[in-house]
Image (cartoon, rainbow, N blue to C red; front, top):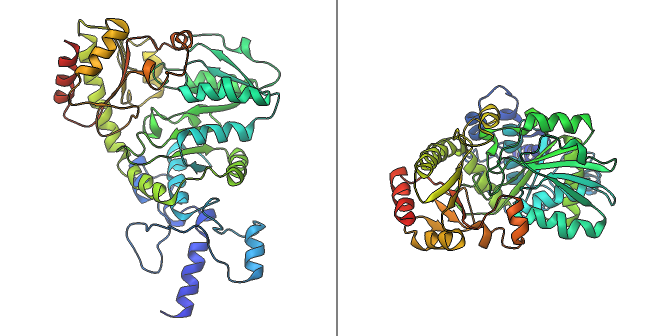
Length: 413
């Protein structure tokens, strides 16, 4: 191969990060499924159809001036995989496009995304206003670690109408999940977005349970959207990952923080996750179809006290869910009669479904939050976020729904 062609191919790769998938990102009118499949980094000189793995820790420079200008950010170029990598860039570009965001940054885990987002945007003395129903590790950040740096949090209940009374002069961020983990509360994104704008707050939304296929919080005013890509984005329980997308000026701060603290996503995981996004729409459609049927079955079962699923009419925020969500999601929460013992007996009788703390897998997963994902919380704290002793979180998989229901039915008897 001629030196001219090699140099041209190198130049093409050099441009990838900042030009953001030149061919496929130009068409902003493509549908979700098409963007998920056709958003790719540019092909190399080998004309591969599927994007290759860029398993390299670093990248080379042509000369001293090229190296100086690259590190000075006078020219777009991959420098080091802790900063940027072609596989990671492709994955981020896809999520940003799906969420309607300007840009983003990917992390080793979902919690790394949440921590890095908040840590990079907050300073000592700032205040967070958050819905009380949040993931257990997020709660631990708010209550154990951030107070060390004089960053405090005030919680509001998911059902509260007036949250503005909690806003202080030092409030910087409005934070929430919807649907929440694991109580499946649904918060009104449009209402929250308006409150954030009125009070000049940064609006950060954990969109993990819904995925960008079901809802896009940026449409309702979110400044940053975070995901645990470990869940439905991967969809098969293989790799860990997290991502934050949103306003370019905010992502710039997050990127600089992450570049210096090191929670970067690995190229291999990014490659896996980017390929997973190609089937996200198909998978989520089936997850949600199965989940609704399971929720309807559970609602009629005599040994179930209540069921929480956004697209059940019995859900207290059903109308809000229908307004902002395309589908009801893959997670069903329900209360087994008999309290703690009832919950344990149910789990011990499960045969096909998996007992695991993960969710969003092809396989149906059953979790008892009080003794697993939220076990670090006190009983009082768990009750405050709706995690009662007998609450079961069920991540509905892609098995035949009749088989899922049969397993749940025999475990409830």
